[in-house]
Amino acid sequence: MTLLMRGKFDKYWGDCNILMAISAVLDPRYKMRLINFCFHRIYSYSESERNILEVKQTLWEIYEMYANAIEQPPFLLLMIHIMELEIFQ
Image 1: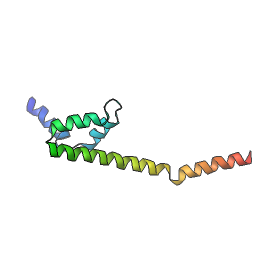
Image 2: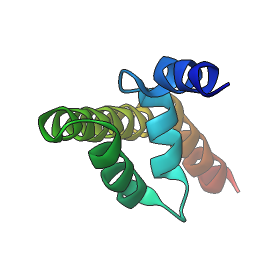
Image 3: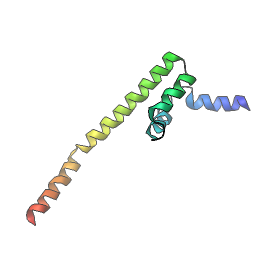
Image 4: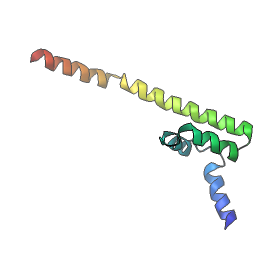
């Protein structure tokens, strides 16, 4: 039984599972504290630092994609349309 559980654990956490780590970070109760706490217990020190850095870099990439999406034309077009409506009224 324990070998089966260990196999499942290694399947999801053997290599750094970015999706699960990011979902843990986005949970307002835990943020990066959970990742720092768990990764240092799951992986060796150097591997945990590398995985923590990978999670942080991925979060920054997601944030940059989000920030750039806000600046794209659909948002600007909406603002122009709203301004045009105000001008004609």
